[in-house]
Length: 82
Image (tube, rainbow, N blue to C red):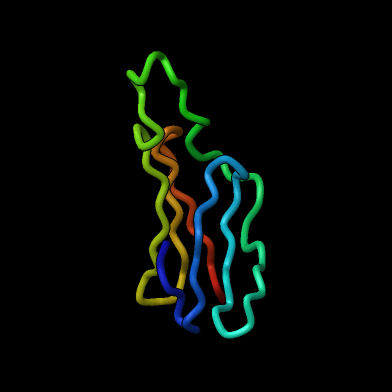
């Protein structure tokens, strides 16, 4: 999770394969990107692989562009805000 330039909360939803934005003033949730190839659902082999084995993340650059990483798929998405 991270803040965007307008003060909204950006959330990577790995199992839903999307990036969402939450407006904390209104509670409205907006989908920013769908169909992202992120980490797969965790495999539980008698607790050998934990749900945090792969990390997906989100960051906002100085330009306001959004970067989403899919740790399990080794990808980085750049979402332009312009």
